[in-house]
Length: 219
Length: 219
DNA sequence: GAGTGGTCTAGACCACGTT
DNA sequence: ACGTGGTCTAGACCACTCG
Image (cartoon, each protein chain N blue to C red):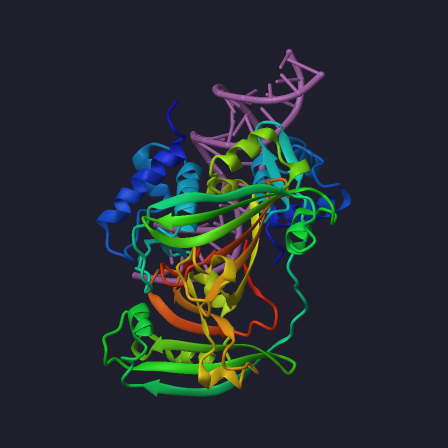
């Protein structure tokens, strides 16, 4: 029913952090354990998590400290994403999208499913996403999710992702959709999404609108 | 002298993985502990690390399995990076690089140190890096490292990084260096490197040569 | 019911930094 | 000498899955 102790300790420590100045020490593992009446390993588990999330940092054999959570220097704003399906079809000859075939571990004439959608913030186009999957590797349930304007983030958290970025001129077919002139440079991302067990799952090609929020790299 | 047990166990398990097919189960935590004569928590620690590194994956209460380490679909090749310093100077008026000032938490007329270098693979230019630091925040030792063709990777591992990517035409001043025509689109990366405690440390602006290896995102 | 991973305990020893 | 984090042990209970 209730969350594990170490999660509760994490929440407690987050609050403690918020009260303290950056770079000030927090209580030692042993103190925390004693204060909260838990074992040292449980306190330690909570601290480890918060370190990897950037709330705290450790320093040798000196102690654990509150990290300075500095703001990013590039502009970020609130975005309310909306997805508009452009089309959803099957491809019997995907030889002109050989990156998709390779990423999905398919042969030239294997059937692919393709979903193309425009992601908007209000009326501002943010990006175009082309999502490919090998029909043979996708369950009906997964297909339903794809069909229902799937949000990719949870899938990425379970599995693993490999991606490469390329600069290029906006493709003619997407220029109007992204409200861009023909000679605008954009970033294209080719992304391979694997399941937790490592089997290929999706190939996603994204074209970003450079006039909106920049492409931000995770920490 | 010798490495911790859990690291030795990690190496042992990596070898075991290599012998097995993807998706085949490995021994349970208890079995490993008994086989190697260690406690279960130590075996567990090793397994956790290997999961987070993508060698193994866990499945509910069923067991732990060998992950399929699939190849990337985009081209990667061996690269031998070489750095050539272009210049190294101080900037007294950095108002035209306001992203650097903001990232380093400095005021308009604070003094910045700038290091510009070209990174090559043999004779192929890979990218241009502009590295900025606030003079006041950088120790002499760090300055020495910067001067000595600093490799940024270890610094990033200690600290935390925030970065944003922008598509743009190659800047005129770098076109010849990167062996590009004037109208080539490139990816620009603006990167904020923080120390482990969160204080800003470096601002790095990179222009990538699109004709070489693509920009690859970490897992 | 047997086995699995997930959590938790109450101890222990070590290397290292500060005082 | 003392306190810190880093490692390690030998147990324990739980919820869950599978045969």
